[in-house]
Each structure stands twice: as C-alpha cells, then as structure tokens.
Length: 150
Image (tube, rainbow, N blue to C red):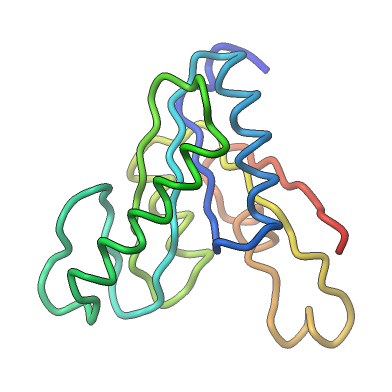
C-alpha cells in the first residue's frame, strides 16, 4: 500500500459480514493516514451524496430514518475504527447498491473501496447478483474484496 491511499470507502449493509471490511479499513487507514467513510446505500430513487447532513426533499426517506441510519453508521465507526483520525458517515440514496457505491466513489475521489462478499453461489448469486462483483467491475479505484464464509 502506498501513501496515495488517503480516502477509503467502506460500504455496509449492517451485517456482521460487512464489519470485516471495517476492520481491514482501519488497518489500511492507520498505515496510510487515510480518511475512512462508512456508507450505507438506501434503496429509493435518485442518488444523494452526503454525510451527517439533511436529505433533499422527495427521496422518500424521513428525517427520523435518516438520523437512525447515521447513528448506526457512527456506532459501527466507533466500534471498528478506533484511532483513525478522520472518519465520516455517508448515506447514499440509489435504486442500485453497486451504482450508488461507484457514483459516490467517483464524486468523492475515493482512493480505495473495502467491501466484503457474502459468498453466495449458484442460483442465489445468479438471481441476486453480487454487489461486490459489480463494484469491482465499475469502480474508479482499487477495490479490496474480502470473502467471509458463513
């Protein structure tokens, strides 16, 4: 890893599996003095980039839900990113999780995305698809994928 990694994005679906990515991002951030953004994609219409701010009108997400999501993101950050000097949360509004993550990474000049896979195989993977796989294909930066076996 080189010092060019200064802005790390960790998307989370709040599963135990995604916490592995936070732990890996902490190590990378501490080694490189990088900022870490913990983000969640909320499935409605449009894309909103942000962090710890208000949503624009018309996205179908009430302020209470938005605040709850940011609280949960902050809890994850506090639990897994101890010692990282710059941590923020972001709520990404998108109809497609992978597109939302990739769009955010492009607009926020992310240097690396750290994401876990759920290890789906066969018919489940074909029907649901892999968010991590689509992020790898379209991301504007390196993507560290961590496979977590259940």
